[in-house]
Amino acid sequence: MWFIATRKERNRSYVQNQNITDKKRTLIFINIIITCVATSLLSTALTTALPPLIADFNISVTTGQWLTSAYSLVMAIMMPLTAFLITRIPTRKLYITTIAIFLVGTGICVVAPVFQVLMIGRILQACSNGITTSIAQVILLSIYPLEKRGSIMGWYGLSIGAAPVIAPTLAGVLVDAFGWRMIFVFAFAVMLVSFIYAIFVLEDVLETTTKKFDIVSFLFSAFAFGGITLGVGNISNGIASQTTLIPLIIGIAGGIIFAYRQMHLGQPFLELKIFKKFNFTLSVLNSMMLYLIMMGTSIIMPLYVQNLLGYSATISGLVTLPGSLVMALVSPFAGKIYDKVGMRKLAIVGSVALFVGVFGMCFVSLQTPLIVAAVLNIIRNVAIGCMMMPFVTWGISNINNKNTADGTALINSLRTIAGAIGTALFVGIMNFVATKSADSYGSNAGIHGMHVSYIAMSIVAVIMIIVAVFCVKSISKKEYLKNLLGENDD
Image 1 (cartoon, rainbow, N blue to C red):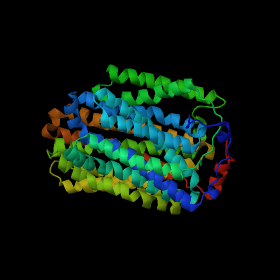
Image 2: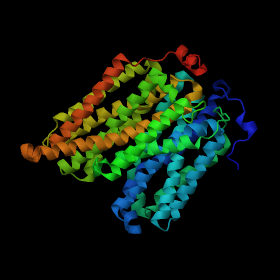
Image 3: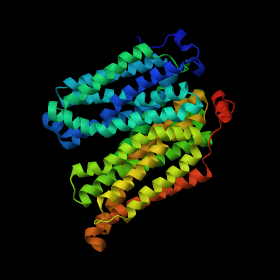
């Protein structure tokens, strides 16, 4: 088949950075941006289309939610697999095939006559998105030199950050004017442009090997990442419920067996030994803490505006929209700052700003003007935008170039799980405290629960500040070159 690597292609020499012209880099970057816009749109657009979709298929809300839940679950399973695919299949064939899978899945969604068929289309989209999320970052980090990595990842962050922000609004217009299927038609059209574009501009820019597919490791990684993601997502049903406990037990057990197997394989499915690189491990932990807070506050803010203050969903959207837009827009500037001053200063300033934005919410009340919450949300999102992609860039720059795919897959997978934990954890704290303090606080029990939840987030932010001050170190070009050539390998 056309996407299977031949022996000649597998042994093809790696295209070094200096052999790629600036024009070619720009063309590849534009192609990646178009692809990411299409995939990112569908990550949030379906929330707007869910009500009419539920009505058309005559299904329950719980069943309809699987269109997003199953999507996240499949992505969590696919991300670890990308490290193998990227190192096994030539870049061009893998990338184009992945886009083709997305087009097939989206086409199925457009014509789906029943809900089950729509689910198949969504699963195919998730498979594609799980791969493109990692391969896009690996390509960019591989073809751009150290001094430009931060800036280019910043622009990449803008593309994946802006699309989910405008997607609900765009989806609302399309649904009202043409129906929910038009969302998929629009995504199909954008991805078709990317597919045609990729055929003409993309090259094999990543090194490939004759690495064999370890089906046992893949299955255990699926149990680990999928089980934990599903279990955490069901915590709202109760920590002791079967829908939570069973997936978590399977996920944790699968993770332990998976890790043990990788550490004892001569050619691991996913290289976990890169965690021996202290700076890479720090980048993963910081990325996870960042996602923990980001996803937690993204759920609690609308609850504060709508449930506690009694405003409409439209007002809630207007309160959070400026912060989301600022986070997307600040990403390119954060990349340039990273290139100039390094990770340490950026991490310190970003962590302090994050603490201010989170801790400030501990002092709002039912009488506080909404503008205060909106401003704190902007501060918080500026901090997130300053650190999100730079942490990825910094972490990958601290490992051998041949492990870029493994490092990217690990960061994406673990921070996705952290985001799911943040959503469940902080909302759980808020509801638990509100319920327990109902007699003492009366009508203020809800706001008290929110305060405690934000205090918990503030503690995480303080940990990030301590790590930034005492542990994070900016990488020099000399150190980067040693990592690139493998001279710093243990």
